[in-house]
Length: 160
Image (tube, rainbow, N blue to C red; front, top):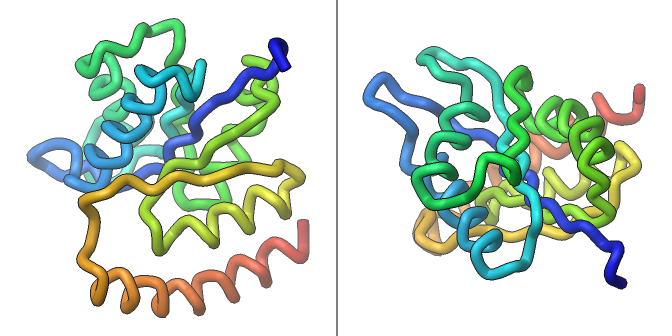
C-alpha cells in the first residue's frame, strides 16, 4: 500500500565514558542500512541517559547523521530506561510520524522480549537483529538469561 509508512525503532544500549558501546553502534548501523536500502522511512532511536552522557537516543541520532541519514528522518526518544519504556515512550512518536508498520532493531536474544512488549502495548511489530553480535554459544546463553527477564516483563505487563 502506498500510504504505508515504516519506521525502525532502535532499542537503546549503553553509552560508555569513551562513547557509544559496540552494541549501540551495531544496532544503529543496522538501522541506517535499513534506511539506505529503502526498507524504512523513519528511524526512532530510543534510550535515556545512563551513566554517561549523552542519552542513548541522542548518541544514536549522532551516529545516524554520521551515516548519512537526514535529520528529518530521525525522531529520538530520550527518556526511557528499559525495553518497556523504550517501546511505550516511542508509541506517541510513531503515531506522530504516521508509522503504520514498525521494525524493532535490537540484538537477537533480546528480540522476542521486545516483540512481546510491543504486542502487549497494542503495537504489532516485526524485528531485525544486526549481525556481528555475540557468537552462537554466547547467544544461546544470552537467550536463556532472557527467560527470567521475559517472565518479569509479563508480570509488569499484565498490570497495563
